[in-house]
Image 1 (cartoon, rainbow, N blue to C red):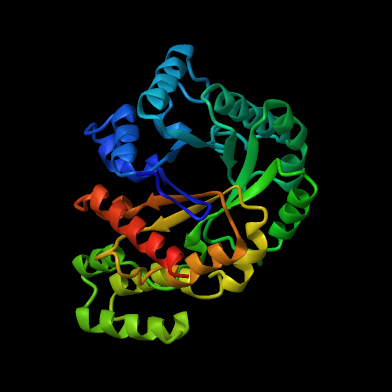
Image 2 (image 1 turned 90 degrees about the vertical axis):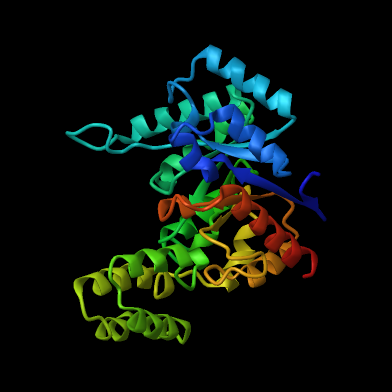
Length: 325
């Protein structure tokens, strides 16, 4: 069954299967098949992770990849590129090198069958703007991921939006819903408790996060270096750097796709971490009709969870909230 409702299309990032891929439980073809079996119509690929010989994919790999797409009748949504500014030990990449690496990603995205490439906000507005003619020539849209700790109020993003407005649709944004995270997810909480965070103080800290207490107030309850460490990890995402949902709809006009980030769902009723009960109605209200890409990242905190179950729960949750909006 294709995951599509009222114009919204549902896809999955193959990065969601990172644990299985890196431990050899699944290869690239099996990841694509799993996405198909779970009911998704489209997928994105982190090229540096799954493309052999990246950033210069061999023709043999491209041929095999094309066959996989055909065999499983999947929509290749986005080639997610990578700007490695630290690839040299003596200096960062120069602007001209960034341009060449970005062009290279666009070329290989097109060879692999993608009409969209995602880059990072480490690309400067000036370089981003210079990509538009090449994108048009290659018939590949280029989007920048807006990922925590960035959000729409970060000053440089107004420059990016101005450039997108003038690019005739070739340049856009990929909002990652991590920018709206309001509460620590359960796997992070579990990790803190396993490392020695006292349960009674954890309960106090979580209660204070819910009521919007400041980081300084939360730190007053810490009684060990472990507790201080985790409060410092928890708090930045729920304080001054958290995004404001009122800024979400205006930027959706520039969205080439949306990353639906999540870390852990105990069921498919709600996500206490990221407010999808507010996000999905806003997506519908905005009339956004692109891909909503589920991106599971719980494997950063635990490799014990079932990727399949997590992705099923996430789709059930977001589809229900969208359809009932």
